[in-house]
Length: 263
Image (cartoon, rainbow, N blue to C red; front, side):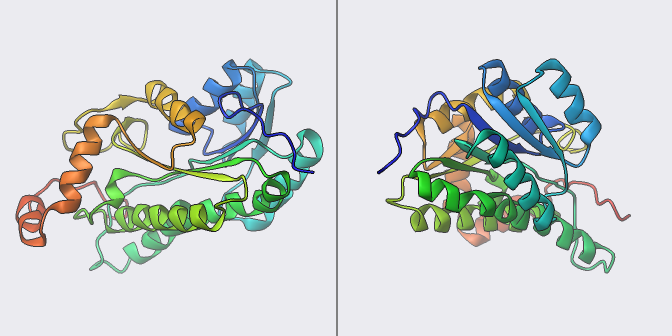
């Protein structure tokens, strides 16, 4: 018998990664304020505990690294045993730093960015797919970026990771078509978080983390297949995608770049 599907606008059980700061924490706080039970994943367990103290009884804390598949699986097994299969799983863990291929020391940085931004998403979703398919319900949400639309100079690792995330989420969405499990791809522009605080260049249409979280929740409630936030960045993203290479190259060759961590 097919299980009754929970109304998407009122998820009761969620998993959110990267929940110790920035967008992940803003999303967790938003859902907790709506009365949901939220399992929060992040490396900094002390920050998760602070969030749990604000919402006792409804915050399950798992201090882990999304690159660790065994740790994510163990957390998934534990929370499913305690609260059941989540209605929504949001993979919002991500890192961004400047990288340049010519520097040997940046090779490890490339690997870390890809491991967290892409494989971390895969490892976050994998333990929940079977349970969601069995329930014929659930939503998997991946936070990508408009930076994945074109390769930005000085941000090869980040742009590549977000482009890979966009393609991965599209593949997953088609694979799960007809199962009752939805996949939502969210490509935000600039959000005021510690990750963007070091950017030495103008960031148009900057969103506060709380505002970005509210907009994302609306998209998740609608189960939008693909969305760019805010709407102004949707126009920017379209323009980026249609620019021929020679125009794109001229416009961005001298663009300011995110600082490298391995200087």
